[in-house]
Image (cartoon, rainbow, N blue to C red):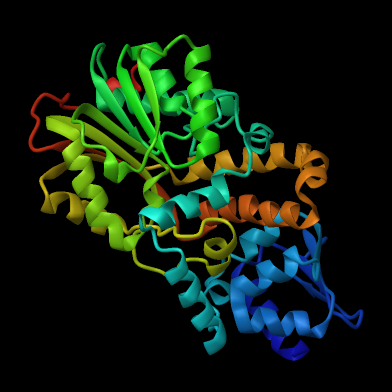
Amino acid sequence: MKKTLQRLLDTLSNNVPDIPFAVQFWDGDLFYAGDGEPAFTLKLKNEETARRVFKKGTLGFGEEYVDGNIAVEGDFRELMRLGMDPHFQNMKLSPLTRAAVLAQHLKSLNTTRGSARNIEHHYDRGNDLYRLFLDRSMTYSCAYFRNPDDSLEEAQANKYEHICRKLQLAEGETLIDIGCGWGGMLIYAASHYGVKGVGCSLSVEQVNLAKQRVKDAGLENKVEILLKDYRDINTPFDKLVSIGMFEHVGKGFIPVFMDRMRTMLKPGGAGLLHTIGKERETQGDPWTLKYIFPGTYLPVLGNMLNAMGEIGLVPQDVENLRVHYALTLDEWARRFEAHVEEIKGKFGDKFVRMWRMYLNGSAAAFRSGDIRVYQILFTKGLNNGFPLTREHVYAS
């Protein structure tokens, strides 16, 4: 087992030579890779831990780390970056593990009941948790950094402004936000552009706080927040936005979602779909799907555009904000660690290790892996009224 593991470590080191690291085996032996001081040292508690990692790949590594059988000293972010190498990401899983992953997938399908259960698993941990690492607007999606040193608060406001300009929002228009979270987008659009908005979410915790935030902003006559599934909204709006929600729809429900967006838009109306996605079909990370975001599916860009085109939704503009999400997650992880003792006291050691891996692993995946975040601007049918260039988006 040790020799097998050493061969894998040699391969990872050769593929990512700028990360020197060390591994301490269960018998005390040390393995060094790369030149210079190790960025991190990985400590394996026992041989069975290594066997489970080889059987279960990223799922096994995540479980063993969360259970405390793997310890990490040093730069956790560099460990996550090393773990993005395809030789580790695409390790062949044992038949038993593949069966378990399939069972988990079938259990977490996004039916009407399943969607509510999946959203509750992640988003109803309690608003107090999210307050500790999100910005003041409670925005839990990719920010937009006009400058690398923008604060998180500035970058999230930048994102909302970026979207408002792309949609060409105007006073008096109606806007639907599918998966509105804690209401940040609608509060910004109503405050800065005078729109009347409706938001929907399946998270009880989010809806309750979003309603309070709307009230505190004095926007109760302009913004309505609903605890409702997107499939149950039939009112047509001038404009539509969905930020970080489409990932939770599930592959089999993409046509349903696209059709609902068409139904929610007036003829010629514009929508913006902001979603994590990929350029090509690859397997999802089984650890993330089981423990962090059950029911998620990262859609392929071409498939999204085809699904839109099939029903008369016309893509106007596509932008990839991949590095912006890495920067966003870096800041979430930093704020998480700044409150780690408080989080540990409320949720325990295992939760801290789980979310440390989730936040840092996600940042590494956007920076060095195969996932992206797209903003797709589209219209319902042809609309010749949009500006000829993007200058209106970037003007000061």
